[in-house]
Image (tube, rainbow, N blue to C red; front, top):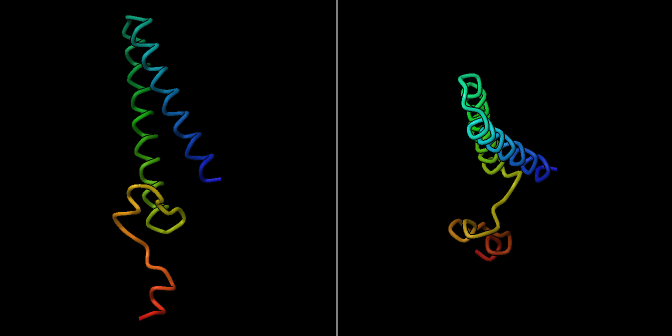
Length: 84
């Protein structure tokens, strides 16, 4: 469920970036400049929101890294603790 939400937010970010590009290239008026600014502002807001949500999920342990970053911070296993 979390993956679907993150992918949906990424899709909204890409859509807003495309919308800003469309308004920037297609129309050269002041009204279009305001639309471009709003689209880019909303994209930045979504990006900050997504970053904060992912950070909170990582810190609370809801999601766990399993790529390159997981090698830098290895998780303690129950077996290694019981052997001590």
